Length: 143
Picture (tube, rainbow, N blue to C red):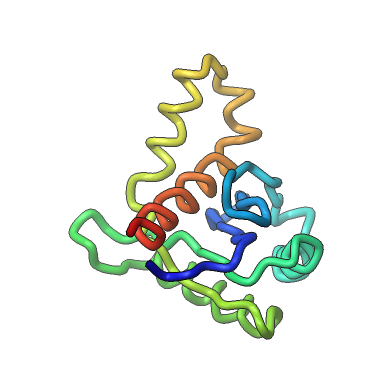
C-alpha cells in the first residue's frame, strides 16, 4: 500500500475550462473545488495558488488517451500544460492519470442527480476532475 499524502488536487484540463477537485487533508473525502475559465483566469497562476492554500503534495492531471490507449493531440496538450505547471509548483509531485471515460461518466452521474444541462455545464469540469481523482485513488490506494 503506497502512502499518499493528502490533500491531492486533480485537474480535468479542457481547452476553455479546467475543472479542479481535491481530497481533504485526511484523504477521507473528495469534493469539487472550482472551474477555471481560461479566458478569464490564467490556470498557471491559479492552480499553484489553490495548491498552496490547500497544502497539496500531489497533483493528478487527467490524460485524455485515445480509446486504444495511445496518446493524441489532446494528450500532448495536457502534457505541455503539465510541463508548464510543474515549473510553477516546485515540491509538488505531478502525475498523469488515464481519463478516457471520465467526462461521459461525470455527465451521467449529474443526470442521475437531476442536474439539468445548464447546471451541469457549471460543474461538469469539477465533477470530471473528481472522477479523475477517485479513479486515481482506487488505483493507487487499494491494498
